[in-house]
Length: 358
Image (cartoon, rainbow, N blue to C red; front, side):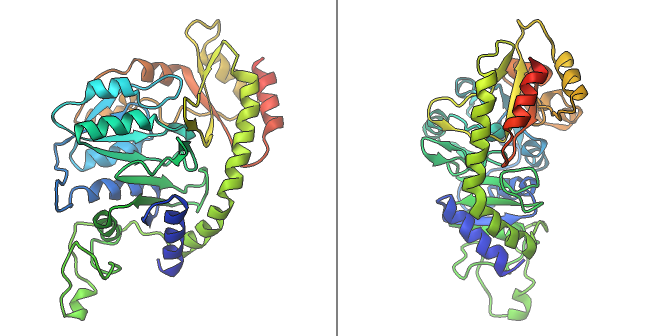
């Protein structure tokens, strides 16, 4: 990790209009480091046992670091059309113990940040974005992954840009920037900005090179990841245009198909279209098993929606949590699936999908 990673971090922050970016070895690690940094702020740090609101549906490593750090999770149901946390349910779920809301813009589709930001401001609670699935999406013209106090992205192989493995944290908060840089790098002082606010430098350079100030990790990226990231970032606008063109073609076939609920951009949302989600409606004359069998026979790959409802997974027995409501999350879990999108022209493949399901 050296100058190429720093260059990519600077370019990434500039692209998304934020002051600081910190690269790590995965989006999962980005969540771990971002959440951890909030424990070590000088003012109003989070504490183990604090209540954190999360959506029922996301990838596992939205939730696991919060559990590992000792927080209590409060799960909120989703909107079936967006698959994102329902702002109405969110408002009802907040208690005097709530310290933070973690939003996840699922599979490219932005959360309703006008309502969510308003709620967090009113209640004086932290907003954090896990934007690992939605690089390039916008709400009201603003990129997702920039609404929170601290925000995370992924550059995994199948995501909007790829460094094979990788993730980034972005923020405008200098203290959190310094904390994240230390936490990704053994918790030591090396690589700290000369104006760092999280420690006072001593005169002993021999000791200073290996001085540990935080209980950190080793989740550093390598220079090759930084080099690839620089080139991938240049291509992101074109990648997004192609994904959206594919999505428009998908929508022509399925937006009026009464058998399926498909993911919708509501209001000021502009999705970056990670994939195409489909949920078999309750009143449909078919069921998901029939659909998946048809896709399998046609050699069309398909997946569960993100990780499905985490409350349906065995791991939940290790969580400290409460659930306000999970009706829609359960329905998506048991009746939904997605097929892939990609930054190449997939119109012929989408034609084939339509013919297969017609």
